[in-house]
Length: 419
Image 1 (cartoon, rainbow, N blue to C red):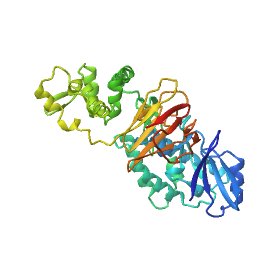
Image 2 (cartoon, rainbow, N blue to C red; image 1 turned 120 degrees about the vertical axis):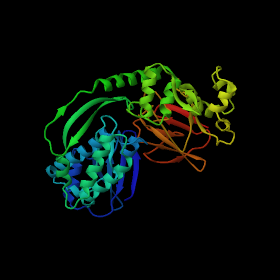
Image 3 (spheres, one colour; image 1 turned 60 degrees about the vertical axis):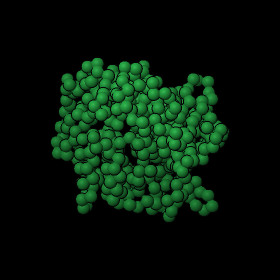
C-alpha cells in the first residue's frame, strides 16, 4: 500500500491510496457516515479516477512512536488486547468485517490526550483476523518489557493461543479475566497505572493492596524523583542508568536502599567506589566538555592512584569524536540550547523519553525526531499537536527533511537555530 501523510492548519491525515475495489460500497458509506468506536475516522477523496482514503490522525501517534524506544509494559499490552476485543464486539453493529481491520503496527494509533487506541479499517483489506492478530503479537513479543513479568507472561500466552488452528480471536480475548489488581505508581511516565495478573478461567475480580515493603519502596522512589527536580545532575543520571529504579532485585533496587540509608555511592570500579556525581561526569559532562581538566571532574579528596583506577585515560580521549549537532534557542521563554547526540534523538516535553527536553507550552510529549545517517542530520515531525516547521515550512508526519547549518526550526512556538 502507498501511504503518505498530510497536514493542514487544523488536522493531520494518513492518506492510503486505493489498491483495489472495496469489498462492498456500503462499507465506505458506513465509515464516512458513522464514527465507529476504536476506528480512525475516514473520508474519501477521488482524484484522477482513484480513491484516496484519508484517515484523521490529529492528536495521535503511531504506537511505535508513542513508545519511542521504550519497551511495552503490561498497561499498554492490556489496553491493546482490550481494544481489539471491544472493536470486534462493535463491528457487527455497523455491518463491518473483522477481516477489514489492519493490525500492522504502523496502522495502530495512540490518542495523545487519553491514551486510547484507534485502528485502521481498510475497505479493500481482506486478511484473516487470526493471521493478522498472530503477526501483530509476534511483533509485540519483540517490543515487550521482559522485566515486566506479568506483561511477558500474558504476551507469550496470547501469542501461543493465537497460532492455534481455528481459534476465534474474539472469543479468546473475551475469555481473559482479571483476577487480581494492584495500583502502583508508574514513576517513569509520571502517572498511575493498574498492573493486573490475569486468569483465563476465573470470573471473580478481587483487588489486593500493595505490601508495606512496596509502599515503602515507592515512597523512596518518589523522594528520589523529587530530588531530581531540584538537582540537575541527579536528573541527568536517572536518564542514563540502564534500569528502572523501582524494580526489586535489580541494581536500581540497590540504589534505592543505599539512597535511603544516606549512602551516595552507587557502584564499584576496580575496587574503588564511584559516586553518583562522578558517573554523571563520566557519561555526560566529559562528552560536552572534551577538554575539561581532570581536577574539575575528580573530587579533591581522591589520591592520584585512585584517579588512575577510577578514570581510565580512554574516557577523556574525545578528540576523534564526531562533532555533534546543536539546537541554539532563539525564543524568549528561557529554554536551553540542546546538544544533538546519537543516531536517533527525540525532542519533546517528556523528560523520561526525550533526550532534548523543551519544557514549554505548545510542545508535545514526543514532538519530533532528529536522526543521523552517514554524518547527515534529518528532521521529522512525530505528528505533534502544534507542528514542526523547517525554515517556515510545515512538516507532515514522518516527512524526513535534511538539516543544514543555520536552518531555523520551530517546535510548536519555540524557535531554534541548527548548527
